[in-house]
Length: 152
Image (cartoon, rainbow, N blue to C red; front, top):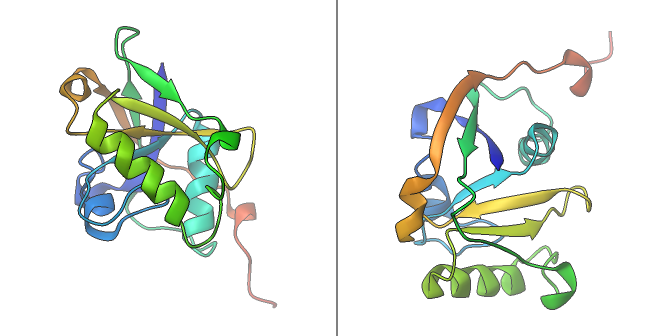
């Protein structure tokens, strides 16, 4: 399986440090986790929704290769009531519990941005996480039509 993450190349885009510092939908601050998507397009949508539709600087796409032997669990949206709430309380509780239990290195979760997409969390503290490899790191080419232009 391949996973895609668009991140700032200046901050170790494969470290989980940003999520540890600030938290995310599926983790509380203080818990390192790497957020990725199961498709390049999904990764772009996630980045766009979090940047206010400004062209992000210093962005790269990190492509992770996950061996078949690495355990992956998929969270079904109906199992966590309120997972998509703006306050992130339910999703953070579920993600923090998964991180603590270390039941798998990868957790697939639904995307709030686009329901058919899946995001992937990589638990950096799980022993199998070291088997997840960075396959490549590439510059991101943003299509200018994705961004609003000031009225001329």
